[in-house]
Length: 223
Ligand code: 5RP
Image 1 (cartoon, helix red, strand yellow):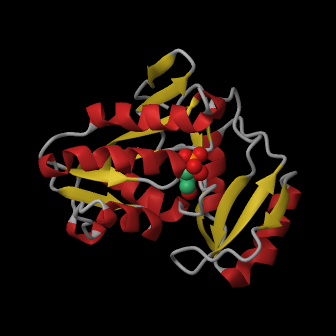
Image 2 (cartoon, protein in one colour):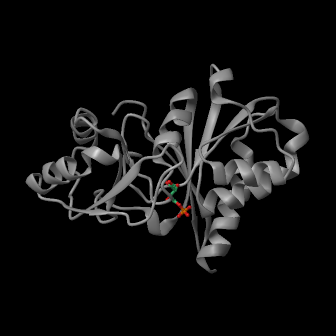
C-alpha cells in the first residue's frame, strides 16, 4: 500500500470516532484531508466542525460541512488530527503544516485527541522531525538563540506566514525525552506563540495505518 492509501484508510477509520449529533474538531494536513473527505459521507449526522486552519475550513465548506466559530463552542467530544511524530505515550510533534497554534486551540476544546497517522510517524523519542515553533516576527532571532543554547539548530521557514500572521522556526537536532517539561519551558519565552510539542494536549488514541490495516493504540490517562 502507498502512503497515500494508508492515509485514506485511517481517514475513513476515524469516522468511527465521530460522535453523531456533535461538533467535530478537525485538524490540518494531508491525512486530515482524507478524513474530511470521509466525513462528508456523514455530514447530515453532525452539527458541524471547528477547524484548525483556513485550508481545512475551505475543504470542509467545499463538502457543505458547516464550519463553526471556535468562540461559539464550549466543549467538543473529539478532535481529530494528524501528527509529524508520536511517541509511545501519545506525545506528539505537530506543525509541519504550519497550523500548530490553531490545532492546539481546538485540541484544548476537546475531551479527546484522536490522532490519525501512518506508521512512519511512530518514534521512540520525539525530535527527528524538526520542531516547529510559531513566533512573533520581532522575537525570531532571540528565540533562535535560545534554541542554539539548548543544542538545537533553528531554521526560519522561509516565506511562510501562518493564519495568525506569525513566523515559523523549525528546530533541528533536538532529542525530546521530557516533552511536558520542554513544552512548558518554551511556552514561557517571550514571543513564542506556540510550540509544536503536544504533551499537555497529547493523543488519547491513535489510529495507525500500516500494511496490515489500522492499528488502534490508546494511551494511559496519566502523563
Ligand atoms: C499541521 C500538522 C499535521 O497534522 C502534520 O504535519 C501531519 O500532516 P500530514 O497528515 O500531512 O502528514 O501538524 O500543522
